[in-house]
Length: 256
Ligand SMILES: CC(=O)[C@@H](O)[C@H](O)COP(=O)(O)O
Ligand SMILES: NCC(=O)COP(=O)(O)O
Image (tube, rainbow, N blue to C red):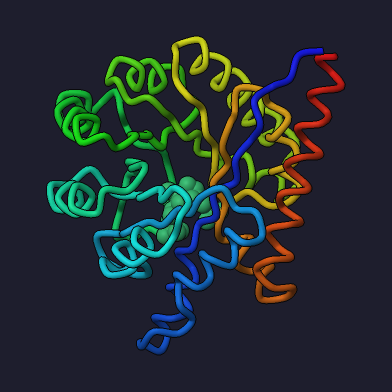
């Protein structure tokens, strides 16, 4: 019986900061929630320092790096300002994401192919600093091939379109998006990339995607923080972990 690699859960704490910023001040504390998530089984913490600082602040990133013993995944736009902050913070990983100020959330993937010449030296500098670089891209062969050529060791597949279609019960769109993810994950793995996924995942979609053997990490935030309001952070992390493990177990049965 072959065993697929286990799958890690990164908990995104952006929206703890959204609530905190509604009144300013320091509560709820992002680091305290991150520690509660880790104590309940999270393998790492993700936070997105947006250029407009709408949720996570510079000081949150510094405090997360100092305060947690698990990997910190620093999501950011590929700008000189963010690169300077990342190099000073020295997180375990940087995930490069596209940003538009008007957007409610990250609507699409990074155009790694179109921005190849600007991204190559940007990624090389982070690689040289020992920071694991991940590119947040659509499951599009052109973008995956560009990511491999750019020498980013990791991609994170944007699952937002698939998750929205599942929630909206648009079966045709959900099936098409799912096929793109399945094929994209296989292509990325065969190109030597480590494959992560995230955006919009809930218990059901996390369970489904955990069954893909190429995917070794899911980053999940918005849904989990909403659930945490109802049942607490620890219970939410345990339930998500159990959903992912159920998905992975399906795969073990299929590959036995
Ligand atoms: C890049 C990504 O998909 C998310 O992790 C990101 O953090 C979304 O941005 P918001 O948290 O601002 O919605
Ligand atoms: N990169 C995706 C992530 O960190 C979390 O996205 P979401 O679950 O908040 O949509």
